[in-house]
Length: 242
Image 1 (spheres, rainbow, N blue to C red):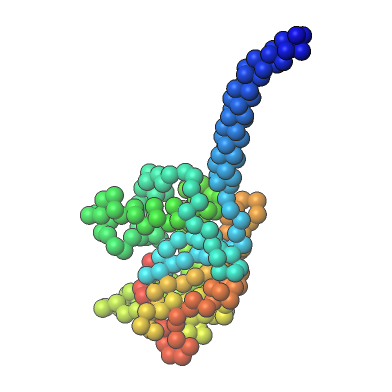
Image 2 (cartoon, rainbow, N blue to C red):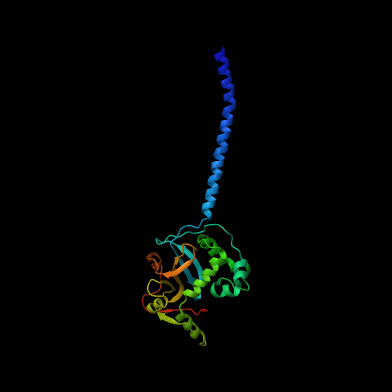
């Protein structure tokens, strides 16, 4: 008799305990999921590891963007984080500076309106968010790099050519142009129609503390292979604001 009563009490208590255990396991699992999500969000806010920067310029040697890259040719993109703030290029930096060194050639600055910011917004989301820099620092660093990477020789040639009526863009043999940028491998030159310089990639080391570009470096083979200018003959350099 005593055995049967004890067994009945155990069964009743089991009916209470089992749902509690099940509920506890659900709560624990939910907390695990939430903690995992928080960890992933924290991880996503951390800038990815990368090896160096490419500073890309294009038409008229004005800004294209500042791109985190790896030695093997891979690169991080669209890393999330802060949304694009159009008041930074338009007000904090100022449109006169932006349209001189980082213009959007698809739109006229007067008529483009919000569309004029598209280039900067694209570069920020695709590349800037992966640098570990805030938007203001990313954009001002890019502009500083453009002015630093442009050889004095080309600026002088452009100024001289612009003084001629009608203006006539200067041209240089490819080896001389490479020398102006620091020598073979120090810049990757892009040409359209095997004649006209349309863009330049310069490579920069990364400061591990500030995440900023630190110093010019020789571009890795994966980047050098992207050059499209002819080995012989003259390369025409468009007139630009130095």
